[in-house]
Amino acid sequence: MKNSNYNILPPLKWAGGKRWLVNEHLNLFPKNFNRYIEPFFGSGAVFFKLQPPKATLSDLNSELIETYKSIKSDWRKVFQALKTHQRLHTKDYYYKVRAQKLKAPYSKAARFIYLNRTCWNGLYRVNLQGNFNVPIGTKTKVILDSDDFEGVAKLLKNSRLLAEDFKTIIEQAKKGDFLFVDPPYTGMHNQNNFIKYNEKLFSLDDQIHLNDSLVKAKKRGVKILLTNACHPFVKKLYKDHFEMIRVSRKSVIAANPKNRTPIEEFVITT
Picture 1 (cartoon, rainbow, N blue to C red):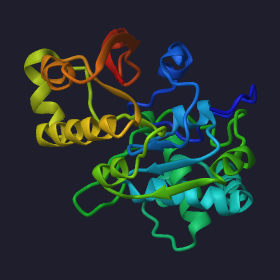
Picture 2: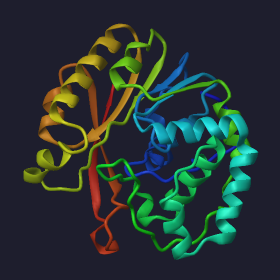
Picture 3: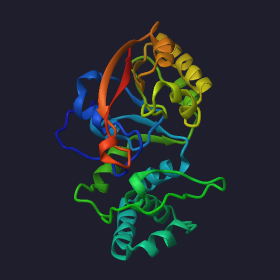
């Protein structure tokens, strides 16, 4: 972990993001490790907080990974294009940009960030044709006071950015590396609805395969911290090989603030 007081916030908002976890439970993360590896990158809140000198970052969302690659290679062009979106932003402009098919990497990255910041709740969703289809949200600020694209690019300098399956990424972890694993899930539904809803995000078979991969990684001497829903299925899956800690967070996705009640999650570690 890099010893730095220089705080760089993620440029994207992501459903299930772990900014709350590193802000409230930083003590759960290892202080020393060789390489940081994250197979479900998302907004990268943990990566930006820990600021590791070497990292492998992956996510199956290729648009997300290409956005980070563009910031890494030419953050100035991305930022300039984003400023244009700020100047032109209206409801009609949002839907015009949402329908666009762009070719230049920097313009595609700026479009991705623009839609992420102005769509409903920062949600990422595509239709059957693979087209982003989230409606416009209430936020109108495209350029944020916290923006530091140069800092993001510098942090990504020594990082490998991939769009690979989680099993492939976890297999690369060696003794002394640190795996932070945050698979897609939600704990917002009651016990009866949990399995049905999460099958759409990350199936039970995926959960089982993930556990198998992590048990093998643990045997190789890899340091692991996994987040998952606080559910009996998850507890049964991990209890024999890992330490399990319950933590609580507030829901930030519910449309009605009154429904944003505390949710328990598991932090699963070696």
